[in-house]
Image (cartoon, rainbow, N blue to C red):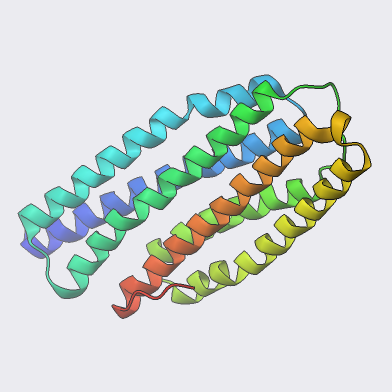
Length: 218
């Protein structure tokens, strides 16, 4: 087998594992959102149990990247593609961390019902899943246009976050004592979802770097 063919096969295996890692973290975000909406404490607890698998993916992908760099000694665009994958796995791992944190909040949440409807939080969860998946897909497909779309979606995420924040502040103002604990928890959930959006933007930025050689923050 030629060195070029071997490199391409190893790179393809690396990308496949990235997709699997992203699929797992996306499922975690989705399950965390479902646990929240349905007040399903056990589902919330189960999300955290998946985080070890995400960490295992991160370690294995790091090893794959280092093996490719050492054995194949890629240059120019090839090197950039491997180093980009190495950089973005940190953000993909954060998808899982944030989802796990949301699941833990649901598991430990007090009360028997919500103090407000979760329409906007649910929308944030769905958007977080979309941004996570499409940010990684943009790299896998070498699709800078899709990366730009993910970056643009962050404005929608920020708008939803601000809406949730304003609603929660209003609720605390109405009856701070009875609403306070749950309101703080819901605010933390919103912040974790907003952070997932930020990490997705980071992944999209690395896609653009992979295509252009220029790393630009948005």
